[in-house]
Image (cartoon, rainbow, N blue to C red; front, top):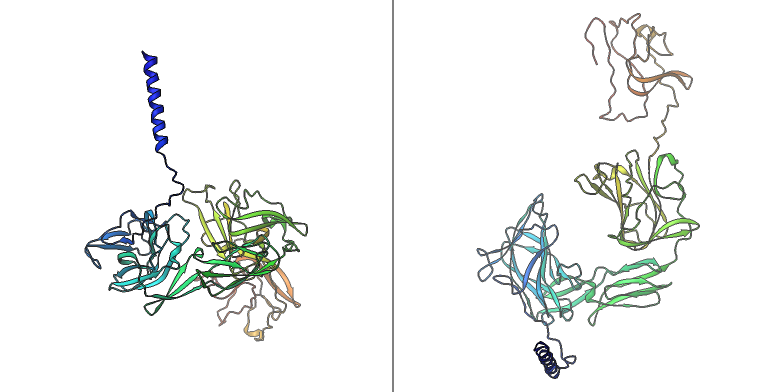
Length: 565
């Protein structure tokens, strides 16, 4: 019985398979269902499928639905802008994201109504930011003025045809103004076809950039200006809206995102269009040869140096010259026989020496030699891991210094940064990271070391002190070539804090004090009777600063009366 029952089950299953096979259709030729073109983002509440996602660092409870104040309907969005020092966040910002992508190509603007509890300026508002970090068609207005009355804000779509599959419906970011927060209300966020947006004027930032083959630079400043009801509105638009063209693809190849790769020697110009409208501005690329001379050879004494990378010194261990979290590629190259670090595709590079942190407590400066193609931006950050020597634990500190002088494009530059400039470091005993940031996407680095600057040479007087002219009969002299001196027991007492020696300057006898804090001069055998005297005279010379708050004090002690300073 069991075998026959099992056979019937098999036959039944095969029959089902045949029926399903007979009913199947070839769907490869069918068009995909279009994405919905729903225009609403927020009315009296969030539109279906839309949610708010706060940006990192934003006040977490900044956004709420407010039924008491609204432009129309029953409620609006109330956004609480925090004041400086608010523990819940330093600003308010986030994205309104749809869980289903929308086709926004039939609209020409995002609009919303806004008012504030006081006059203010909304830093950023826009659309096509889906809070993934991979948004391609972000567009935004900056500096929208706000008043205590409702007003309509219009953000034109740079090129609507690009927004056929978009999840980023709206985003904003705003911080305290003059350190003080306020309340902001937004209502009726939606996409519209206004039909009143005219005179589209796209632009890219003009620049002449130099880099060598293998380097990458980016088109920046991609904007579109529109006439909205007779008033110009500037929209900062992602480079993906534009179409870029290189005048010489053998020199410069450009991607849809505006990244220009230098692929060969020569010059090329990159221009752009927004749809069929030419953009104002162009980027000229000049391909350069790599440096042919090495960085200057350091001459500082090795005992005063802690070196991370240099042929001139023994280097301490460095774990990585480009971390996995940075935006750079690094390679080791030889320039005129000298080992050099070459960075390409650089925005910022992380250098780590965590396995053995560096104690630079006794050092005074950081030294680097850099070869830059673009000197607009160069910054150095140091990170100290604190007394425990590991990341975290509440004792880490960091500070970044911007280098604004002494840089030369297409040549080696010497950078000397006093460690005192890194004011945010709570200590320098466990330095573990260095981050370099540059506008030059190709950068050569050599001779990276901390050093202790020797103390400046002590200057000495070359002329003698002025010769006194007072008559000897009105003087009691302790020390002077111009008079007969009374006996002095000691010019540096055992209890003072100074070193003393007799020297001659321009043939004149002089007392020289070094390591000086205070010096005790004693004339106890015999003591001096200055009852008939009216003043005290001394000539002194010092290489140290004597301006306030520096002080020079003289104390006289009478063994039978009060002392006086």
